[in-house]
Image (cartoon, rainbow, N blue to C red; front, side, top):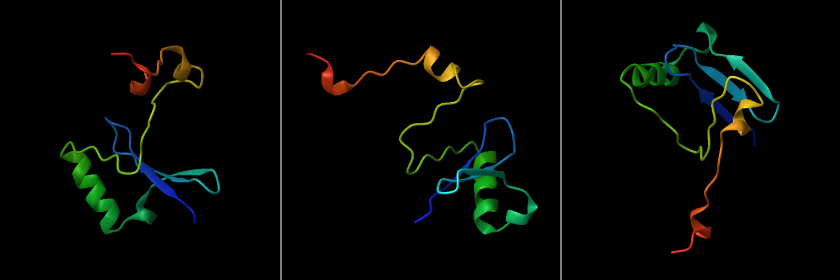
Length: 80
């Protein structure tokens, strides 16, 4: 089953549709308009952040930037 994600960058009105199976990212324009997109747009304008089904999201200005300042701390490995 194909999975799709809709993402939007804070500070812009742009929404993007990601098709995981086909490795395609499309900017959502007026051809995508409908009740779901309108609900998302209204929620974003109200300051709502939705992350359902996402357990990591990294924003960077370059591909190399994601690993430069990132550290992962697994809570299961910490000693008390």
